[in-house]
Image (cartoon, rainbow, N blue to C red):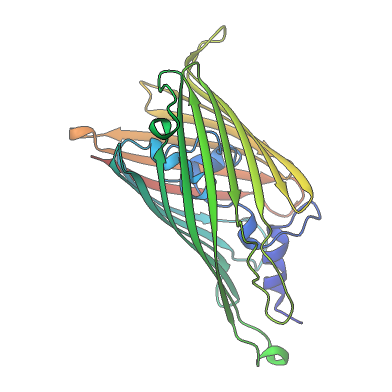
Length: 309
């Protein structure tokens, strides 16, 4: 089945390192998380959590909305690929937990587009398990997903439908210990939905284990408001790792981030503007430099987020 060259390029950018994964199975969303190399499973405490670990929305103390835009693989002539993200978290009550909505999109104009719509719920479960909150805070969540892809085929395949959709779900668990240790688990695309046109093409189930650490002042080196996360990703028999670091300085207003994975290295920055009634405007930027696409001078991501009571 022949497709436009740009459609093939779109597959390549989410493949890299000769591992061909579908566009839904990689992560080009969430600027704070991208600044940490996509290692966010054991952190997941903001409006990016629906894509990384849905259990994390139970730890969001305020309502939050985030909107992201990007330019992927700048410098590649004739290639225009964008990733966009909208996420929202609404904490209901301590007893009832939190709900979320998220939309992510990856595509190239007039050729191919991949959209995911997420509707999530999570709550703290210490009361159900009778676990002391002073030792560990436990949360669990479920994310319902609708996947939609749209491809403009060439004349040879014009009889094929240009769109395909499917429903699936994610589950997530998160444990935050009093000593700063954090453990996260996320299983995504549980039903491995079929997104193929003429032949079966399933979105692979992705299992992620995250281990993280948080300290208000990292011992010995005195790094303030320090967070680290290491993610182990299991997908289709392959194992991948992601590592991310974050620190906040200037009265916890300026976030500095560093991360990486086998295919790329990432850096990121964010600044929080605090207003009356604890409302906060956050501006985040992340840069990703791929190792195996020499013609590109990197991908750029920017987001605006707003937290309020």
